[in-house]
Length: 236
Image 1: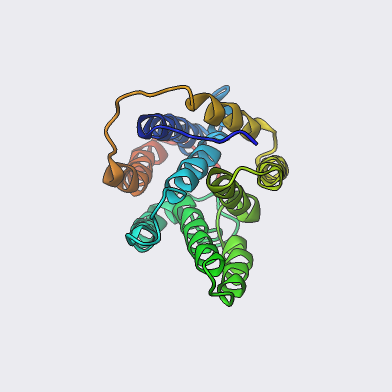
Image 2 (image 1 turned 90 degrees about the vertical axis):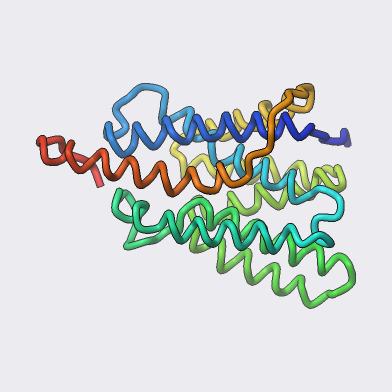
């Protein structure tokens, strides 16, 4: 199977694209009741791109040894908690705070990946830990198990290209179709493959992407307050 190798700048470019698509999708959803054309469809690419970038970064050599799993998990947990109040306030959830926001989806992917690496290194009981986190965590977060499976499959393929991992990527993207209401998530795959040909010089701003998520949700909520007082009705 062909190896997937992306330069750091290419991964950053994908993150910026995902950030732009997510922002447009949230503006459309939370301020305009999903009435703006094409933004909903384009927004279906944001989550797969964020998941794929995270999976590629977690697949870097030496990630487990240098403590990157722990640092990434702590940041995702912290900013996921900070994003929860505006996430709930904006509405559109199934029940209360359920499902948990996308940062917790990325957290589950990180934890399962870390457990699988330990299991593969000889600590066999971590297979049970990985399965438990996948099943329970995947039930609690946005986009559920298909998003988690996508991250695990992409990471597996980057580490060791094989047909089963490729099938996992395709299956997980297909499983997102009934959740999204369309198959636009598949468009993230050619973007990922095409990024392998790019080598842009972009700095890696980790904290920007973590902090932007809760801040942009808070901004959207604050913008909605005067809009609601002016008589604008929001679907929640």
